[in-house]
Length: 271
Length: 152
Image (spheres, chains in turn red, purple):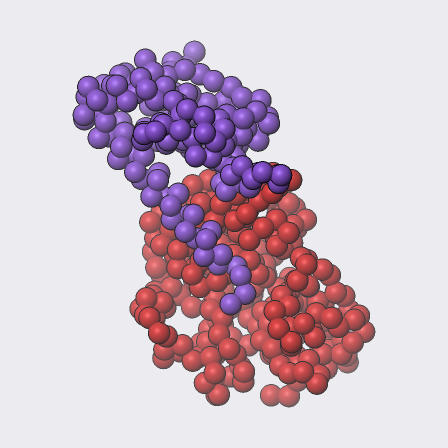
């Protein structure tokens, strides 16, 4: 699959090391769509290719939005691009969040750190089609207040009907007036109806392990819990094997998996 | 008017507690209020009370000389503040501050310890409930220590 030429239209700084980039096709709008939870391979010319989750609104056609944390040479090169610079895009790839299965049910979003980025399209989807879903509960944790993504948007989300947004940080200074504690401590404040809910979780794997434990202890079935996995995606079509996780290719069969399928693998050492 | 007995029995920490035990504890309880910014207790002070938070947010802080305090946790309505009253030398290891106007029920630790010494069934119930809280907070602290959001 050959990368398509895209142009960066906007770069917004979310945190000291995380940026949101808005891209449109160089050839004008192509009307391409994506499923919330899917990712693209972004080609940074002269540097390499990166798998990045799409973090924009699925209803806004003709543009792709990515939130990227600068953690290495390639991501740093990507986020230091200027408006008007070109980027190659392959995709979208992978499975999305279970939007159809969630219709008519409450949606519980649990995100840690930059894990909110792949979940933001689900939040847009639910808010854009509010009558199609039950309550929306967003539980979001980050390391510190300055690491929180989409702060203004979260405030706006929390004002929507039938929506509860709870935010916490692991370490808070005196100027932070919100909750302090790990993301699992938010469950006691969440108004959940486990038997009619679908949970979607994304964040560091350790965090997801503790979150799934918490969700199960609240009565959610493993079949109603979905996780987005991160591995070293290269080809994005299940060919090269770089992202193999047990019997699964994360790029093709994932990145979103039902927890029931992953549970035996998550408990394995040395995988 | 809400009685202390009813408030205690409806607090999540004491959910399903035998009514006879609640009645025993009422003699050790009082209503308290703290204004935003008030210290509820400070590190090193005698730990002779614990609190059932009814309203408002409380921060549990580590005192850091010449720096602003480090907030290690926040507690809100329905939660418990303080367990140092349970164990000798009965001194607070951290400080707690009201981040909003806070309403709480204060339970006199010495009074409650005496009642627990006299009635071991009550003591066992109280200890089980505190052990659960301590276990949850230990797990949270471990997760904070792991620093799961750090780039690895």
